[in-house]
Image (cartoon, rainbow, N blue to C red):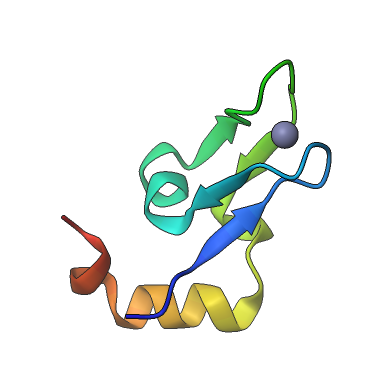
Length: 59
Ligand SMILES: [Zn+2]
């Protein structure tokens, strides 16, 4: 299974795509980082792959 994750542009924290999908918009979990991260910030190819293989990412 391909790992799909978003890297926070402010602090470099890596957030898994399945966490993004659930929260829709979330505040970065990085320490003292208030960046808002969302599923939309993933690349188009990553979003497409994630949606097509959603059952693999839901635990
Ligand atoms: Zn961050």
